[in-house]
Image (cartoon, rainbow over all chains, first blue to last red; front, side):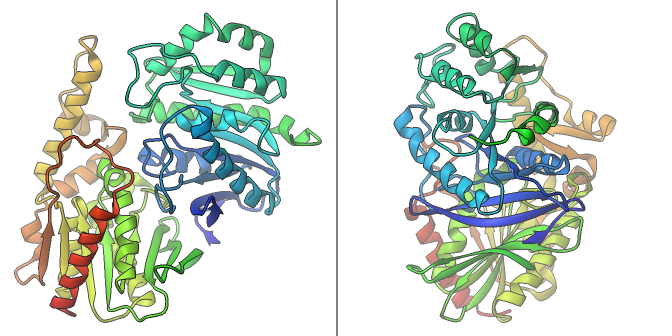
Length: 257
Length: 260
């Protein structure tokens, strides 16, 4: 364990999963006990979990300063991890190995007393997070940043829209499990445009039925792949604000799912 | 260095250590790859690139470190303050702090690896850093796609920013042209999602590889990539075919040049 900041300690780990060793960094609020952790899952094209301009490292430390543990992991085959990288595909079979990785990491977190898990994913990571509903123990919430609504094959995306996949069903299942969900999109992102299109169609009933469980934040700047600094800051603020609001209720929930 | 995690690769007989080094608030992420049982024959400090180049070259440097360790070279990688997994305020970064951080990593390398046979590898801007860090001891130096001067580096970077601005504007907004003017006015600019401060820009602008090498440099090996058509711009998993020959070349070269 290495003391890193003034109010946050970073713990480094290699966690075994599917024959690979996943590198992770757990940001711990110094002197603050707790059993809730946000697990940050990158997008497919990211070199490592810290993200462009350290956006995810900054977010993890910000959450730790709010009193919430935050863990970020490098996918197999990226960053400091061993193994081969995930296929950048959104179908269930392609995501299942990454769900196994999340289970391995949450087991490691539970061994440290962190039994309530909020999954936060960007792009591919958001679809991994959604696919974990009902499969990973201790889920307390979801934060989905630029979650693809349609099931693209990476690199072969149509200009807008795309094949309708499992997104609405998965989001509905999360709401049925009473999981609070934060959706974040950039107004100028094509994923944001896709979300607006789906909101007027198959997503509408899901969002209406979920009511206050699902919060949607559409920020002004592009945030897909975090291509600019203001967009990064808007995402960090949106996530921190939402978690500050939701954390007390999560902590008072007697049993995590 | 406070070691945070260790992994052993029994098959390649390599040990990976990951931890933090240096003084708060600028605690640097450091990773050491070293042979597990046999003594290391050389100590290589890897000075990484900065900004967008960091993402492009990161995975290759990890794999290269592990491959070199399997060949008997102890490799120390690090991330500059305010970058990657390291702590620290990126607004404080200058060329001088990049070199300071390389010296912190050198101390770790000499603590955990053999004290003889120190060498440096620098990628892109890291080549300038490695040249400056190696100069006091005339250590052997490997330059990977080196930036040869700061001014042309910024010129290329600002051109890339302009190109993206034009492609994103789609005719709707005027493209962002005057990077230097924005730097002067605001003290920073957004360079492809990275915050570049005037301090960093100005401190790097006048640096040149020839000057950083000094009048009596140690042995130098320069490596440039072969142009490869049809590849994705970012290759998250460089193949063994790309890493192994480079590792063997570097290992053989380090053996041939010996200790400084």
